Amino acid sequence: MLGTFTLLAVYPVLSILFLALHRKTDLVTGFALPTRLDLSSFEAAWTEGNFATGFKSSFIVAAAVTAASAVLSIGTGYAFGTMRFAGDRIVFPIILLGIIFPYEATVIPLYYDFQDVPLLHWNLLNTYWALILPQIGQSVAFGTFWMRAFFRSTPRSLIEAARIDGATSFGVLWRVLLPQAMPAVLTMSVLVFTYTWNEFLLALVLVSGSESHQTAPLGLSFFAGAARASDPTKVAAAAVLVALPIVLVYLFLQRHFVRGMLAGAIKE
Amino acid sequence: MADGERAHAARSDPVGAGAPRRRRRVGGGRAPGDPRNIGWLYVLPGLLFYVLFTLAPLLHTVYYSFFSWDGLTEKTWVGLANYSEALRDDVLLDSFVHSAVLIVYYAVLPVIIGLGLTAALTRTAIRGFRFFRTTLFLPQLIAGVVVAQAWTWIYASEGPLNRALELVGLGSLARPWLGDFTWALPSIGAIGSWVTFGLCMVLFIAGVQKIPTSLYDAARVDGAGAVREFFVVTLPGLRNEILVAFVLTTINALRSFDIVYNTTAGGPGGETIVPSMYMYQNAFLYNRVGYAAAIATVLAVAIFVLAGIVLRVGDRSERT
Image 1 (cartoon, one colour):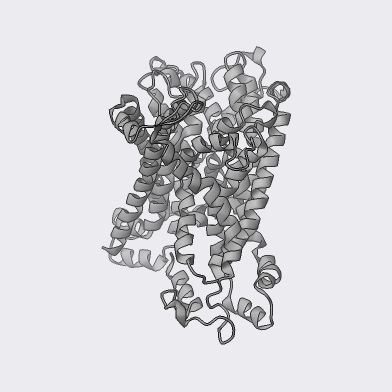
Image 2: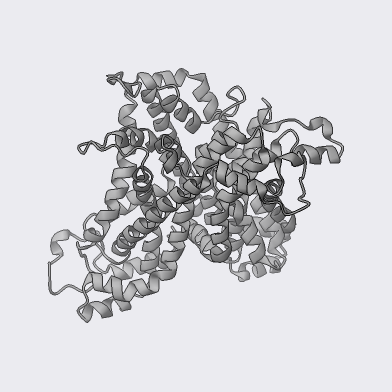
């Protein structure tokens, strides 16, 4: 029975892969079981859909968001997990709100404020910044929650011993806690990278005016709109390409994905 | 919060956060781990990004919702006019009805299916669970745009679903599913079920493994059958997991922009329009920014309220 449902879970993924392994002239219908390994649709999709650009944009944005939110979340998680300070019990729930936050409701002002940044009068629309900055803000919520849970689980005695030895708060973090925190940081990074790579609405609203800044999912959406009627195999190939980096990372680091999404969901 | 964690918090905070502030002395005489306002130094940078790029825009959206604005010319203050219009707007009402339908597909069905399967599997050892977990989790990680492309193909006139129907002799049911006035919304709903049910399953199966086997043994000694065992042991034991699954999947259903935009874009004839889609159209296609902001505000409130209700209900059932 579990097998049936597992098949249900993979079939849509397989079906689009099968379709992508054909070319337009095959006039595929139905299950489209591939008869040969034909990668021509992938080649065509890659160049016609301009995915070299899409991948570059997505990598830049996802890498920047992942790195920045990791550094920021290590800081916030460290403070909320190991220290008491005035207001911590008010600020932490506010950050936690970010986990269920309706980000759709932020795109309208982001669009207008990035067009003409208040006070600075910069136009960040159609730049990487327009995607990077908001997604750092969004990722910090999960990151804080996740790193705080990790830092709380480290033995107090470790921190106390280091402090008695005269370590500063930064020294405790840098030399004592961070080396142990690496698996937790990796889990967080993998998830943030995935969410950022997959993001669509922000890209649609904030960078669709600049072809050179379009992310891979946005490029896929445009390409599908333009090419689906004429050649579904190419669109299928494009879809497989966009999913591929995340699926590959998932196959190698799946424990991190599952642990992050389950534990992240249950802890509190 | 787990009890263990709460205990930990108590230990690490001997003074108690509720202690009067003036009892704190700065500098010496303070045990390590006591209040350290240096914490703010670590919190501020992250908090700054969070406030600037999520909280402030949300408040800004609320502010816009009190104006009539085309995005170009001067805004005009209209008070609550956008909201009173929203109350009378049939399309908006429809979009929330569609969301409610999607919640059934995204949240209720996957939780029920997940629980059913978990119940069926509780008494058997699962061989190769890691393999199942890997595949069941996959739909969660694939971009909504990609998911939309995969299912657009499955639902296409000459796609696999219609072909399968013909094979089993139900060819008369074949149709272009996403272009069908009656079936477009359920078709999108099924995509949502597909995305979320793996998450529910993995959550529940992982949760069951944390229920002490002694509880099952006790139930069996009491002569409980599989059904009773499920309601007495499994279901209460999975309370947290069910709650989490409901919150996550319900929010997924209410947001659902990527899949709708990339399959039907709200069509045919508005049959699959959802609030986020309608907000997008008003803001960026019809240039009705103030009204779009009002829709966004209503959607945000709906999400917070629903999440609150689910968590509240869960809280109450814990006490009883």
